[in-house]
Length: 285
Image (cartoon, rainbow, N blue to C red; front, side, top):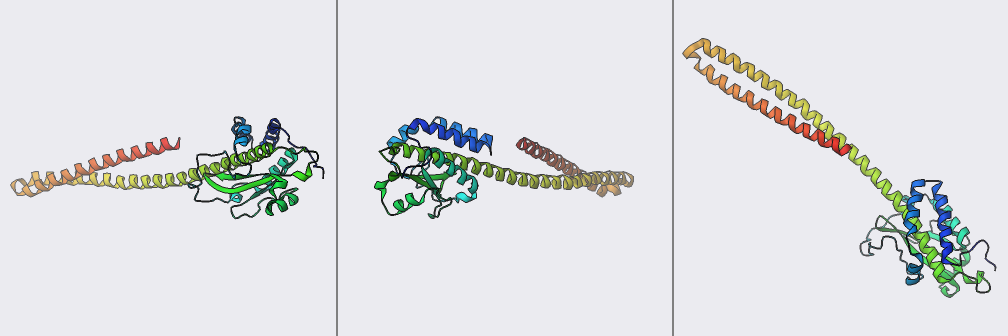
């Protein structure tokens, strides 16, 4: 059966697919599209595809994260808009002629594979000699979140016109890296938003606490003022009573000492509060 739609028969045509996919994503998020375009621009797709296995299950994105470190899994549904994911996948088929589908960590299909029935039946029955296929991990935030599988059925291409395994592998790798960049951009954007929200809540708690400290410290200042007045009154009474007022003098001295200590503590609290407020202002900048 003759394959419908355009196909990719050379690695150079991969760049065309990138531009089409980026144009699609740009309609939703221009900054994200630019990031994806920059991320794929410097990829040596040909050399990576040639050295990698056709169905290795590995992706060049985030190579520093080992399988042993990825002990947790994420659900790709929580990160990507599945409708948008389906549209990108459909666009991939239109541009490359390669079918593809995304599955979650439990092997359940997240997207429907267009023109996938023929490929899927051979894939699941182990008839790999009738296919040229790719399998790539979707990795988000350092953890596996799913897998994208796909390729072509050789019988759909007469006269040896099918894309080479190298081209199929490169196309699958490019699609996976595109999805990885998109998913990670959204993941970290959400993570940063959550962090900012959490920081804002904690900042409010600190500011409220500082307000309480200032309020209570004001009471300490008033106490110090009253103690000074009591000390002054006691000193006056001691002077009037002469020798009989020696006790008043002792009380006056003690109250005066306490008043001075209270005033000093109040000043220290005010200075600390000022430092905390200045630190919060700097963090908020």
